[in-house]
Length: 299
Length: 269
Image (tube, rainbow over the protein chains, first blue to last red):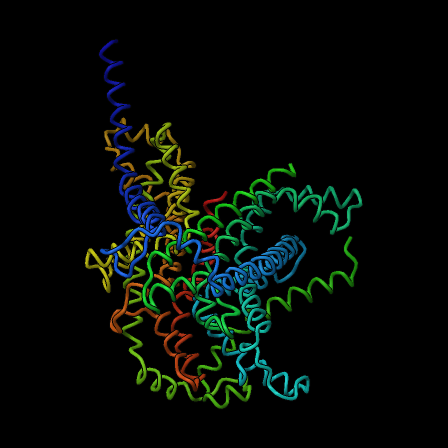
């Protein structure tokens, strides 16, 4: 009896150890290539220098400089414009599309879903360049607008502050709406369809079902997509570089784009770049926290 | 009951949004077969200029080298990632205890760390280890991802414990159980993980831009981006390059659409 117990104990110990063997490579890789550089980035943000071997203590000067840096403040503002306009438009569109496609009586459902989901298969750089070409001065959109007589002369979408931002927002909506829709569709599958039928019998309009059934039951998914989109928007890079190149006059540059430029394009300033990166980290964390709090409240 | 006008409005909305979603890609494919001047004039039917565009493209860039690099980097990341993360997901779920659950929460936190916040020190580490312009430099930071670990942990949850017990009684070792029982039954999870990982690796632009500074190590997204540097844009050639860059992921999308959707949403169920 004692022996059996002891054996069982050693066996559970062995299983415990096996578990650690299974997960150690992954955990180590995350520690070395994610947490360690993050901590290092935090330390660098209080230093200055253009080579890693020769960093000097710089106190909070990088952070002070950051808030006086007009281009950085502009990139911060741009990122927030994208965040405040694009994320809500995209999520609402995705929700509407998903609840339409969840309708059992809808025809050509497969076609609609595939078509709307298709932009997700496009490489980020590719779609940025497609949109840049479509909206350039001699691009397709201008040609068509002029042929239709809506415009007399080509409109410089990409060299105009509002135009450049609007095209980036449009491109982002194009690329990511289907992506979010897929989340909502998979969330909707967990809602019994009979709930909708019961609501219909009780005389609820589709709009009422949408607000009183779909939205509340999808809340965890909506929260998740909101956090992911926020995270993605704060890190926008490919679009800013390839669609507008940050222009005109930095009016569409994003934070990651500016950080890349200060690190690898101009004379490297690792400490300053790290300070700006840490601000993004703080923003991502804070916004996720706020969204989780707001998401919890309505329960 | 939905009234007819409402129904029409619904279909109209879906059709318009579908066209909006497809149009840029169709335009791109058509532009790749046309001369730049026709693209500018708004020609919307396939042309006969594909070969010329191709010739211009390979004259100006190292297309097949970049394609090869992109495939090489993406396949290596995908293979390593699937092995490392599935082992971890399985380990976290099957042998879970207080400490492992705690560690899992810490790993999930890594999901919130923006890439730029690790990029600069990572660049320093890679430079120090001599990994600039190497496959290792590209793959190391993206092998282990919290998302994939979570995906495999989730699927291990549905893996019946009885099977493990039975296999143990039959004398199978823990690692053998993983290879012979878990791996074959979780094919669809592996397919989903594969599509999403390959896609992310192929898409990656910022990181290779940081560590690949030689022309012969550049990836497809970098090549396409570099083509736009000149003042005059050859749209036909540019769109052909974009087509080459997009084709692999679009093919995966059409062949594995279900896995693809599962890969995106899988970990949140």
